[in-house]
Amino acid sequence: MQTQEVEPPEALRSIEQTLSRAATDIPALAPLFEAFGPLLAERARLRAKAPGWTGPALAIDPERFGQGAFVLAQTQVGGGFEDMSAHLPEAARTLLPVMALSFPAIAAELVALGAAIESGALDPQTLAAIGFGEPVSTPGVPVAGVLEQTLNFAASELVRPFVERQAQDLAAQVNDLPWHQAHCPVCGGAPNMSVLRRKDDESEFIQAKGGRRYLRCACCSTEWTYKRVSCPACGCEEPDELVNLRDPARVHERADACLRCKAFVLCLNGSELIDMPDLDVAALTMLPLEVQARQQGYKPLAEHPWSSL
Image 1 (tube, rainbow, N blue to C red):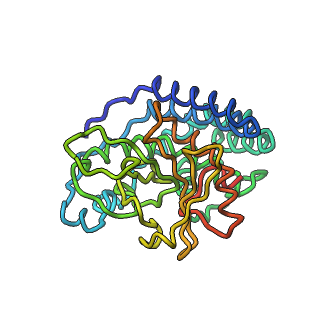
Image 2: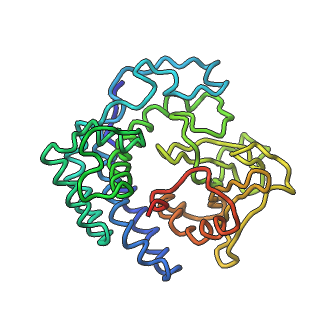
């Protein structure tokens, strides 16, 4: 399958502009934006240079897909993303120093992790497995001087640009196929965010007020349409059991929670915004809503990168 490099300037501009607005609007969260901003920018650069899906186009069975068999469940390469481990040492050389500056509390651990990768004490295949959350029993892992929490966080950030780039290619193969599931059509992951977008196609004359709802995969950042009034965790469609947690000062942000299963997902209402913000930064701005939801006993469908910190 032929892939094209995804140019980063537009993505970088979106990140920078959204960060700038967010720091002005929510000064209390400025330290969070300062920490994650450089990380998000470097991830965008790595994603733009990543090879994407290099194998042949997949033979997708539309019937199976329509029944919920996501793309990677139909591959012949083990049901997962292509091996990107060969690219991780180089990615670590650029990403880990950025993370060390952004997160001084774990900087020494990130330096030790980088040294272990360079020396071969932590091989790329094991690093990739950790990034995907797979159990690892290799001697010497976790890396000496690196807490398991730090190792998991760093490894997941290293694989993410390559996962997202491959997902872009794979999602293009099924854009025209119907998908009504709450899990990702590409990798089967759970969503950690939703967004309401305007639909510019006037041919669809019946459109819910506020735009169409999209879920966003926590693993590969793929977006897909989903029912407006429905809990993605349990499928509940009873309005009385679906609640919105809001900050009156930020009317475009909310947490959609379910009284039945006690799950929640962050939601950005971009249907009336002039410019759609970068969604990773937008999720950062909704951290107070995430905290509020957790304090009220709700659990996220999937974690955000900062949740482990």
